[in-house]
Each structure stands twice: as C-alpha cells, then as structure tokens.
Length: 488
Image (tube, rainbow, N blue to C red; front, side, top):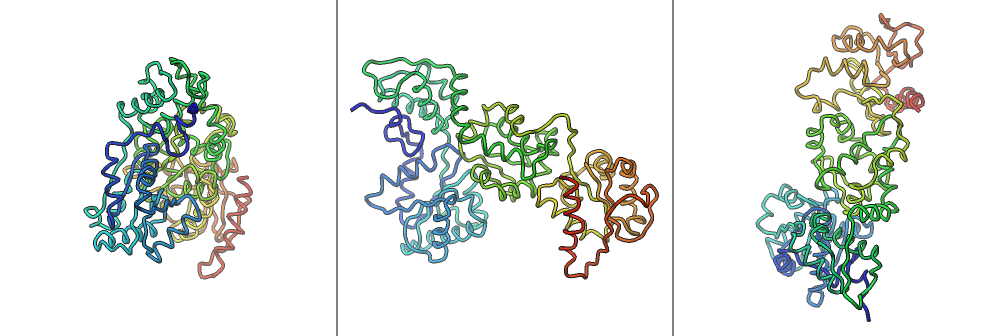
C-alpha cells in the first residue's frame, strides 16, 4: 500500500514518519516520567511544544495514564479548576497555561511546589505547557519552585533538524526537493510550517502519494506563499478583519489594524507592546491608546478574536499563538485587508474621539465618563489613563495638541472650579477656538458664565451630586448615551 502525502507531511496531529525530536527530548521525557516532579515546557508558537508532549504521552502510555487538558476548551478548564480544588492524583498535561487566570495559575504553581517538596504520589503530577516566559512567571508566583521542577524550552528547529525532517518525508514519498534549504529559510525552523510548506509544494507538483520512480521537485517560493495565503484565508481572514475593525468600527480610526500589520513584520509572533511602541514612534500613539484597557475589551467582546489573539495586560505581552495565522499575516496583502475592513483615507484621523476637560473637584465624574466610553471602545483622553505615556514630556504641549487638534470632540465639565483653576483655564484657551465648529460639548454643572463659550450653545445641564446613590446611572443616561448617539 502506497503511503499518502497527508500521512507523511502532517499539518494536524502528531507526525508518524516525519517527527523529529528536539535536542532536549530525552530530558523532557525523564522529567515527565519522574513521579512528583512538575514539568514546564515553554517556547514560541510552532516550536512543537504540544507535539513533543503528546509524542512523549504516546511513548509512555503503557506505563503512565496521562490526561491532556487545554485552557482553550471549556470542559478541560472545568477539570483544571477541579484539580486545584480536589488535588486528585494523576498525571496532567495542562496546555495553554498562560491563558488561565492569574489566580488559577498560582493555585497550580502551589500544587506543583508541594508535590515537588513531598514527592507525594497522591498529589497531581503537572506538566505545564505555555508560550515564552511561563517558567519565569511561575517562579515569580512561587519563588522557590525553580530548583524543584524541570523547566524546558523548545527552540525552533536547527537547519540540520529541519533538513532531516524534509529529507525523511521526501524519502517516504520517493521524491527529492531541489534545494531544501529554501524551505528551512522560509519556515525559520518552525516545525508546523515546514510540514505545511512541504505538503503545499507536493500538491502543486501533483505528488499525492508514493512515487514509483524518483521525482525531483522544484518550486517558486512566491507561488507557494500565494497558494498558502489563499488556502489560509478561509480560516484567518475574518478574525484578522474583526480584530482590525475594533469593537466599535470607525472608518477613520484604525489602531488595531496598524497594530496587526506592525506585528506581522516582526521576527516572532510574541511581542511586548511597550517595547513595540517605543521602537516605532509613528505607531506609539496608536499602540498606547489601546494597550491599557481597550485591547482587552475588544478580545472579551469578540470571541472570534480571543480564539486567535492573546494579550496579557500585566506584562503587555501580545501573542499570535497559531503559527498558521502568523504566516498568513506575514504574507497577506494588507492594503486589501484595509479596503475590506472599510477604512477610508479621506477622513482626518484623530488620536482621540473625545478629550475630557475638568477641574480636580470633578475628577471622579470625569473618570467615570472616561471608563464608560472605554468600555464601548471609544478612544477618550482622560489624563490619568495616559500619564505613563507622556513621561518626560511637557503637559502644556500635550494638552494643547490634544484639545486643539488631536481630538474629534472636547467634553468639558463646566462649573466655577473650571473657571477658577489654572489647568482647566489653559485647556479652555486651547479648545475655545473650536467652539464655533461645534467640536465642543459643554456639560453645565452649574450656572457659571464663561468667556468664549456663548450661552446659547446647546450642551447638557447636569447637577452632579456624589452623595446621590444613583449618580452613575444618571451619568450614563444624561451624558454618556447622549454623546454616544452624537458620535454614531
């Protein structure tokens, strides 16, 4: 019986004929086999962490009953929670550990520490798999766990390892690739991508199973890339578009789109957004505007995005965990994506939809309004949200830019405090030039009269009383929803 192409170059599951062991495979196996010793396997997406662990499971299955659980599946997540509660004995592989809540991670780390210290076989034996720095994060949670557990990093395959994978598959099909080094250079050591590239090259050359006579195959990388992007677009175009459009689509405001396009140009699929912003000055405002809160809100509101994109707001790590998606992003036509999303170049882009001007006495009200707009993914300038972004800069210059040119509307909380205080007066001097254009939305908290803001400008009269138990609901109804309708 002839071997089939999909049996040789495997894009799903564990390769039977083309699996290559990472250099530290045996070390990982020994630590997994050793009773009571927790194991951590970390590395970039596509480096074969899960495949290696599953291969070891198969190798040890006769001796050990291993349970595979992933944080991506709701039933598995329930089982992981149950393990922390009951501490049921058994061998458990917990994949996508970084996607678990911090509380759940810490509970598992404490179980691992106790099991390592006591060698108690009645406690769970944990094999934890996650993206880069999982080991470091566990050590930070439980400081003395490092010397008690096996921490292993799976690196991308070397040229020798990947060439062996390619040649072993070619031998099973009775073919030869012209210059397999080009495949390695394209995959950059990614095991999944190597398998997929080989399969695509074969299908384009009508190699679907074992060849009766040796066949030498040549290929053009540009054609292979185009073919793969076409194939992958069925799975990944929608999540990329949905992420790019944000929670609340605005044709002139595309920070999420810009972020994805920038990440696609990076070497790795896991990036620190602080470092990315600092290294790309022209993108700094866009990244800083969404990395604190709005990015998490987007992922929580769109399940299609959270399946493919991961963000840790604490360390600002953003990850594309699916190597197929990252390859698609690196080679897709981003201008075509931008057009499909509906972004327009004929509308002047603003960093903020709203900038809030207020006196310190009304900070609580201003903060609540800002939080409400952030929840609906409206870029809003409220000074406390952006203090870290403007370190080392003069507030006067930043305020002048934001209130004069870089906000679509100014929402000003006007009262006697606003009139008498220095900073609100400075802000008012900046934005009062925009009053005739209808860009200023006054919120009248009392009857104070302001020079430059005519009495007949339509605003919102609102008597804010912090002692009123329902002031937040009233603020939503009388201020937030009305301004939102105007934005829409």
